[in-house]
Length: 337
Image (cartoon, rainbow, N blue to C red):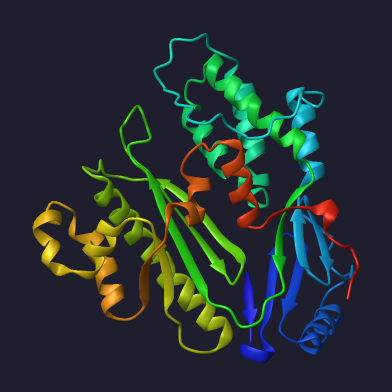
């Protein structure tokens, strides 16, 4: 990604080999850049973006939608699952798998191919992020039960080919981050999985999940570690956005569903209860004191990051899938401005 100018003259250029995506805050600046490039190189202007690296793009008066339906069909054909019965969720609720399974071994190459193929559509199919990441843990020695869970993901993909990620038009907005965790979710290491979601207005701009490097002793500790991780990303995103807009970074709101964690962030008196926590995880306190972030409580029912930390039931999964911006692309108007 390359950038030229800022503010009202901002121009962003995405480059992959000989394919370019050009966008910016002023159409005149975009056209000027195109003419400069045509004068220097032999280039073709394909007009409004509609397809790029396997990603189908729909642009309408309501916003932009990204989808990879054709790529998903190719995955199903490669796995021999194009005629499978559809599933309503990509992973069964409360499913717990282990690397120490005693089930029958499966073709490791086929398992790798499916996992590798599914990781790319996760960029636009945010509803697959948790399940694909979870099944990636068993790539070293996949067993029959792991492959069965993998096939359920494919069944879900087959039933939801038209899902895409929608980015609506928004006026002046701010960054809001959600963080959550699943305590000791890895049955092999007893480590927790923490994740973060960042929204700019109503649009999801970052989704990330990571297994923590420490074994937490309480839910407060695991939430505190997760909050510190999201704080580092919040500072970086705020600087990046401020750089694009040509002004100082704004305060980012973090949404946390654990009151004990908020107390640890806000009250130094709690040091006695958290003195065993590595000092690097207290970075979030510094960020709050400096005014770079603010941390607020949010109820578990409104914690959007739940979709990234655990297998959910059908109703809850569908609710959160919609709230993070996943839509049926067939229902989006294709009318262009």
